[in-house]
Each structure stands twice: as C-alpha cells, then as structure tokens.
Length: 395
Image (cartoon, rainbow, N blue to C red; front, top):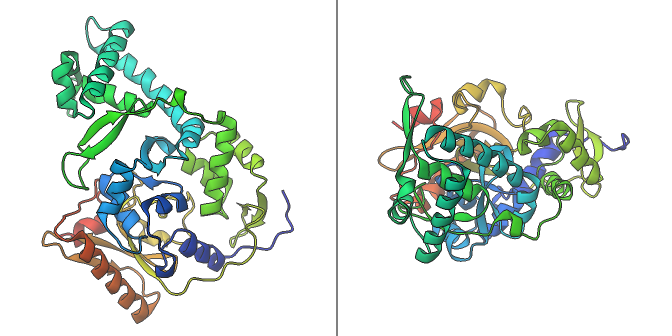
C-alpha cells in the first residue's frame, strides 16, 4: 500500500457520501435496485426500513416501486448476511454475498437450531428434523406461497413448541416452525415473499428459493474480495476496522479481502490510515446543499464503525438504543444534525440537535419532512428498535 496519496478530508468524504448514497436531490434515482446497489444493501431487519431508505433516495418515492423489486421482479432478495443482519441486496450480487458471508452464517444457524431442536424435543433427532424439513419444502412447493401457520397445517410437526429458559423472568415458548423456517431461509431454500399486512409488516408469506449450494457463486475468498471492493466503492475511504465491523468477518479475512482489492492507503482527516480504491482518489465535487430524513438502521448511518466524522458523539445517547441500533436521523450536507419520528396523527416531527446550517438547513429539513409525509400518507411507522429521541418526538 502506498503512503504517498493525498489526504482525503472530512469534506471530501461527505461529498462522496451525498453523491454515492444518492442523498442529494440531484443524485436520486428511479429504481429501487439502483438504490440497493449504491449502498451495497438495504438493512431489512425492520421491514419498514427497506422502504423508507429506498424512498429517501428515489426521484419519485413510492412503496410500490420497492414492492415491485422485492415481490414481482425478485430483483432484490433478503439475505441473513453481514453481522447476522437481514439485508435486501440485488439478486445479481446475492451469490457474492452468500459465498462471502451468508453461507457461513447459515451453517452456524443450522448447527444452533439442530442442537436446540434435538435437545429440546423428545424423540427428535437429525433424521426426524431432516424429514420435517423435506415435508415443509414439499408443502411450500405445492402451495406456491404460504405462511408459517399454513405450513403447520400440512406438516403438524411444525406445531411443536419448546419452552426456553423455564422458570426465568424471560421464559418463552417458541414454535419449532419459527426456527426451522429461519434456517431454511438463511440457507436460501425458501424466501420471504409478500407480507400479510402492508409494507411495514414483518409477517411474511414464504415462497420457494434457491439453495446457496446451487448458486453459481465465486469461492469464499474471491467473494469476500468482491464484497470488499463494492463496499469501498460505496463507503470508502474507510478503515480496515470499519470493514471488519460492517461485514462481521475476522480480522484475517478482512485484511486478505482488502489486499485482493488493490486498495491503497490514504491518510484520513484525523491522521488514521484509511483505504480507498486506486481509481477513487481524485476530489469529488460537492453535490450542493442537501437534507435527508433517514430511517432507523439506514445503511448510510450504519456504514462505518467510526462515526465521529459525521456524528457528534454527544448525540449518541439520543439517537441510539442501548444495543447500538441507530434510530431515525436528520442529515445536513453529510452530517447527522437531529432526529425525527412520526406521531399518531401522521405528523412527521423532527428536532435539530445542532445549529449547523442555520435557517437554510431548517428549511431544507422542513421540505424533506413534507416530502416524507406526502408519500407515507396514512401509514404509521414505529421503528422496531426505539431510541430516546424517537420516543419523545412520537408522542
């Protein structure tokens, strides 16, 4: 790696962010697939985030456009991948994500589920588990799409339950179907189809999928290099630690993947060594003033481990929950300057935690809030992971 490259300062990183993440109005796109490609993948742990994040970057924000990609064209697919998080990624790039990350996670999910079922249910062994899974896949193929309850009608063994942590305050009774279907989805054998409710619902119908083993994917090492290259193109310059955190890889795998990208070392604004692709070293023109209201767990807000260059550490207690999940945020020219929430009557309420940008920023945020309210219409959005400021503003 070369140390002779010019420093990429904070302004340069924020200019790249506005353009590459499609957050500036002049950079927005028409298709949901283009949004997912720009940010590598859309966080999908919270079903609403996929739509909110995509529509924030679309010229015409419409949930129907996201639903087209997810459920009609299947050009976006949900995968349990980076950091054991559910992402919606482009179908063409899904084999790379599967080989680099999701496959190893699916293997661990299967080991854990197998121990859980065979250790918690009398008479269940690996053979019986395999038989139940085969019957489940056959039932789904026959139906074409089905809920967990539908499949339990066809495969009564799926109705079995296991009591977890008996006698504890957090004792819970868990249906076997939930864990089995989760693992089958993690392996690509089934996929999440249309939800039973609207676009904020996480109660999905299941549809048949393609097992990872049948995908024409590159070997894991090559796939990790391809994913690292795609991530650096979207999030660089950044550090090895950022990429390790974002992917959930080991430090060794992360370093090897970076080395295979031919990334060069550049000093960041705080003096730390960063990484950038060799064709990504020239200055990037700022896209002009922009504001954005991004949802909880938005891919941009969750793109780096080190966030000081775009987030005042003093705002973390208001914008994050105790597990490190970020809530809805207000952005101005590449910095988080506040948060927002939707009230029961549908109003988009927001608060600035900084006077950065002054009246210009406040006016731009007001415009974005009106834009958001305009396409959300009568839908009510409550983040799965709630943060102090979001709770306060939503009252």
